[in-house]
Length: 70
Image (cartoon, rainbow, N blue to C red; front, side, top):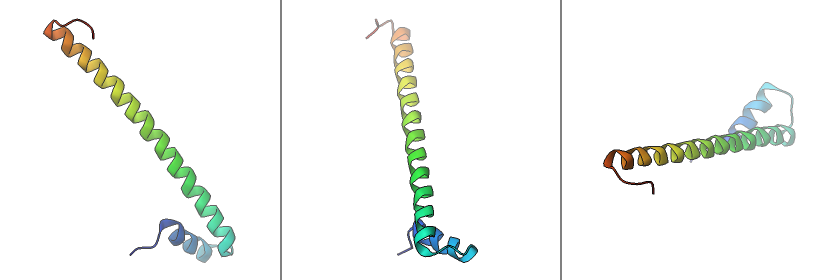
């Protein structure tokens, strides 16, 4: 089983700096959590955009078929 990225990057940060495990771990966790949050926000925006596009295409298709709005 591979190490969790937080553990791996904490260890790497400790090697590259003189930070102790607690400080390095807190920093890496904060960066990881903010990255995860940003990714979730982008995913939600992409899903909403996709849903709007699907609705537009469904309306176009209904119009081409001569169906009323619905």
